[in-house]
Image 1 (tube, rainbow, N blue to C red):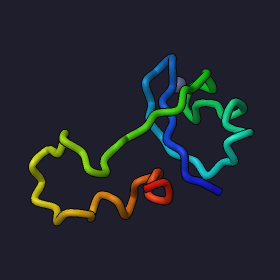
Image 2 (image 1 turned 135 degrees about the horizontal axis):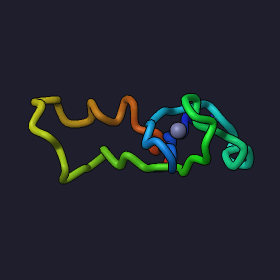
Image 3 (image 1 turned 180 degrees about the vertical axis):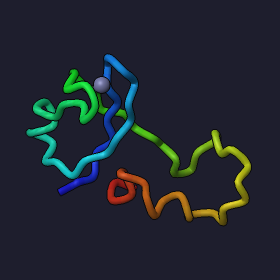
Image 4 (image 1 turned 30 degrees about the vertical axis):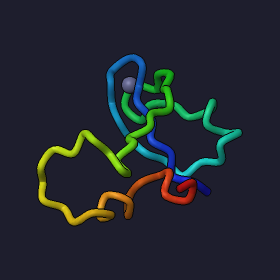
Length: 69
Ligand SMILES: [Zn+2]
């Protein structure tokens, strides 16, 4: 199962959950039970690095899209 990142439409809570893609529409916010949308962190090959001195590729360890590269 892929680890998918979600963000609540109501309270902006971000969380990630292991869920099959065809079940992601059923995922609800753990805080308010509101609707969520899938978000893509896009850290790999990112131009948005925040200067935290991580070696190249370190961010890919947690990237949900690492299998798609
Ligand atoms: Zn919420």
